[in-house]
Image 1: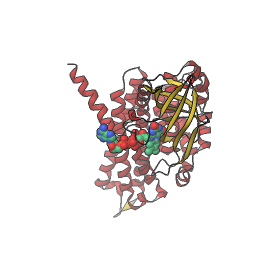
Image 2: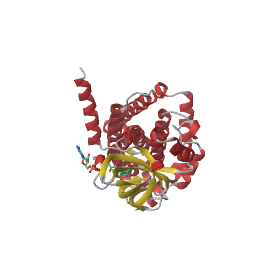
Image 3: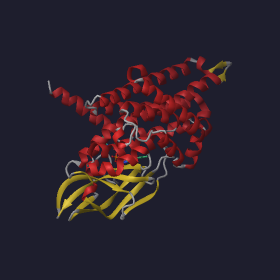
Image 4: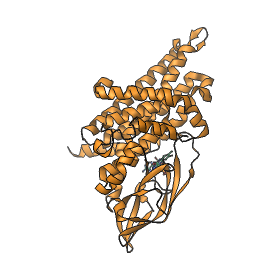
Length: 385
Ligand SMILES: Cc1cc2nc3c(=O)[nH]c(=O)nc-3n(C[C@H](O)[C@H](O)[C@H](O)COP(=O)(O)OP(=O)(O)OC[C@H]3O[C@@H](n4cnc5c(N)ncnc54)[C@H](O)[C@@H]3O)c2cc1C
């Protein structure tokens, strides 16, 4: 299938990332998971390989590759460790892309080269305690004070932020008591008034950094404005649409990582004098897993291809994210079943893939939200006729 979407450059990139994942990530994936340790050394190595700015244009210090390349990198990383994959995916699609897509030349100059080289990590703060799926219900405020804004409020579940140098955030912009709309800001994480909480203790993605944020009279100048009041929310929704392609890729990688372990195990394990894949009950599971992964991969690369062609990807990205994340949950569940009791213990890795899969149905829009987006798109297209 890669022949459909890949150039020679994509194939070389994937080979390089696969080697990196095998030699550098796989040997420490269990330790990272067990300790919940953020893999700073792997981030530095990915930066050395030029992966932290894969789809960022060369003029801003990136590799100048496309979204297909970005999806392929995330997929390969996730086959080894989803935490490493989300660290890179969130840094690029949530931390860097909004600045590339909507930032002023000043913001681009200030941050893009550092982000694309991996010298700085990026984060994205949309979710709040009372604004998740209903992200427009944000309560964080940015009150105009002369040329500055004073930001108060907070965000929750923010990926990478404990290690990030820059944060994109949304806030309700107010001027003299008047609500002007939701705006977006790009701020340095060492801005006085920005407080970062301890890492969350999670079910999976244990080596990924997730934290709560508090803004206490955080004063930022108007050049931190990423999107004017009224357009900030749209900027973030556009960011999430693109981000969904990377979560779909992460889902395919997570599913494939678990499937490969199950396939290999089915060839080693014997029961009743046979390899277990000689039982149709097991081989049919493997057939279903392989088919679901192939379908999820096609949807993901198709969405990436559409994006690379500059087409509207709202429906395609939501479909890819929905199907691939639900595939990751199904495939990792079945992988445990194929391994029996060994699937339930940490040594064989599939329980890690299973724990890492669940968040894929939640982050960057839950499965329910994806269904809302897809149904809205198909019903709108019906009304055109
Ligand atoms: C590990 C992790 C990392 C994250 N990283 C980030 C990050 O970097 N930046 C960031 O901003 N956020 C991040 N998030 C937040 C994530 O995007 C939200 O958790 C997610 O969007 C869901 O929001 P919620 O948790 O408030 O759930 P809710 O919106 O409260 O949803 C609860 C349930 O209600 C359902 N529901 C809600 N509204 C509807 C509706 N209209 N129709 C049908 N069902 C509905 C949901 O689908 C869900 O099943 C992260 C979360 C986690 C756990």
